[in-house]
Image 1 (spheres, rainbow, N blue to C red):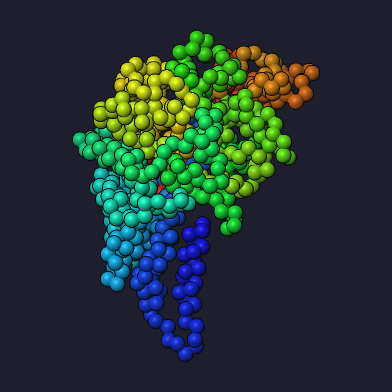
Image 2: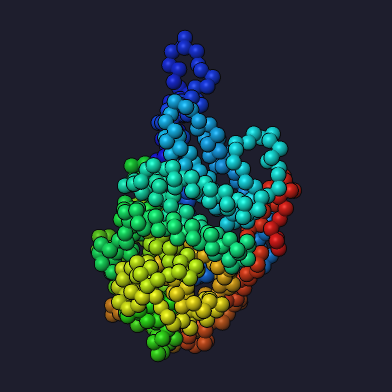
Amino acid sequence: MKKQLLWLIFFCAVFSSCEKLDQAPMATATKEAVFSSEKGLELYANSFYDVLPSANDVHRGDAMSDYAARTQVPDFLRAGAFGPRQSSGWNWDQLRNINYFIANCNDPSIAPSVRAHYIGIARFFRAWFYFDKVKRFGNVPWINKPMGVDDPALFNERDARTMVMDSVLADLNYACANINTTNDNTRSLITKYVAYAFKSRVCLYEGTYRKYHDVMANTADKWLTEAVSASGMVMENGGFNLNTAGGSENAYRQLFINPTPVTSEIILSAVVDPNLNVFNDANWWWTSATYGARVSLIRTFVNTYLKLDGTPFTSTPGYETMVFADEVKGRDKRLQQTIRTGNYKRINGGAAEPAPPIFSYTYTGYQPIKWTLDDMFYDGGSRNINSISIIRYAEVLLNHAEAKAELGTMTDADWATTIGALRKRAGISGGTEAKPTTVDSYLQANYFPSISDPVLLEVRRERGIELALEGLRFDDLVRWRRGELMEMEWNGFYVPALNQPIDLNEDGVLDVSFYKTMPANPVAGVTYINVSETISGGVNPQQLSEGSHGKLTWLNNIPRNWEDKHYLYPIPETDRLMNPKLGQNPGW
């Protein structure tokens, strides 16, 4: 937002620069003002930042993912509910702006290294723009010049994704080589190491996509090697490290609730600026019974959080019937920093109060807190003052680890500096120094039945936990070709019996009770949830898996259907009608 205002102010100044009535305006004033000075290039480059996701885009980004139960089944996954008429995203305005800059950034009065720097920034944003387009649509037209409305190339066919992604890689290589800014303490600007970090994300995506979708699979290792190299550059030269301030109890969550980015770990952020009235709506979206999607984690995923000794929680005898207050104890410390657990408190009118999961929001009992501030003042409207990370160092470590695991080159030292370091930060004591040698049967059976490599399985576990709710999960499922996980049951914590009020956080106050017949004498302060088979003449979406006890389930009555066509979105109908040569993605 701040950059957009600067851009607007700049052009207002350009267009109002003829202050004297007898001074003839120059026909090329605007172009010269931009491209003949470094300040002009800098201000023009600020207009590219709209390509980045907004703070709200990021914190809501996993609303459609395998581990997220929500108010409604996404239309994208409902048979007959989504197609070319509902599709969107075929917009190219930002690309023309970038290409216009690249084509005109050639004034010889500006030092070649300066021009290369700003062209590098432009090509970084073009890479980001195209990466988003390819993830969504697959084949798209590659356009690397500004086009007029009468340019016949506007009606060309789509180019192969492999060619487009090769061009994206060329843009990123140029950006990494030529952007000369190496540090930005605001964490809101593109630097050389932002470019390398993003390159590691792109190359990991493309390498695994080609491997698991059999798209030029013989080139997959090239991309994975590029991912290792790019992430290695950040690890060796970027000056970043994992935030450990506050210890294992607080260091992780602090990354997501701090007003200013935690610069040791955050590489790129959507920053807030109260002076410019720039906020986000994380609290409103994540705590409201009506505004947000009421996203809650499911039990199948929560079960993947390890115990503090580094062993699987699902190796614990009786874990299937363990109640909420017990199952969250002795676990990876990221769990208590991602959802409400026993020690969580919220500020209400200045006083901190125990805050167990509340069923006016959660459907499963696993209520997220990752992006929400603990003061209830922020719960209504766009008031949040926490900056929202877009890229952070932990992801770079995960990219490095996964690419090496896919290549089969991970060593114990690699494990210790990536997955092991992340687990140490989370308070886990075991298995942090050497890569694993045994397969976790629960993780394999429920998530990746075709993967038998224990290292790759554990890297994927770690990625899911560390990056939960950061907007990367759907992309991961797509590139791994594991879209079927989107059909996973939306389940919640274990309920031992009906009409038995439960103290969720062990503060001595009863919180919730589940019933099929409402008790005649309800306990004051307890939230009562109807789990009978039918409600108001229809199927009750909230039930218990065993009828009178068992796991909470949500919306099992509405099927979610994943087909191969869902790995790509359809070309929007209106755009295809304008240019029939675009064709349509398979199955749509």
